[in-house]
Image (cartoon, rainbow, N blue to C red; front, side, top):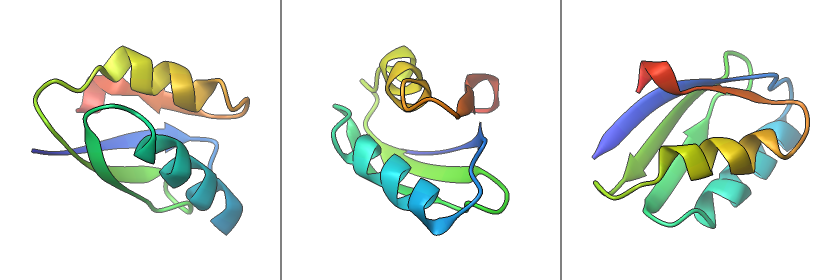
Length: 71
């Protein structure tokens, strides 16, 4: 499955790398690609992905806000 959502607060290649690294550790997510200029994030995942867990992990990094209503 593929989902596209927005992560607000991204602004550089380090943001992209950090979010993609964290995504790799979230159960159910197979891949993640972040466009740091727009925040558009494409995620390949299985049907059992816990989106609240994903949101918590990303927002715990401090400066990001995940818009789950877009998925």
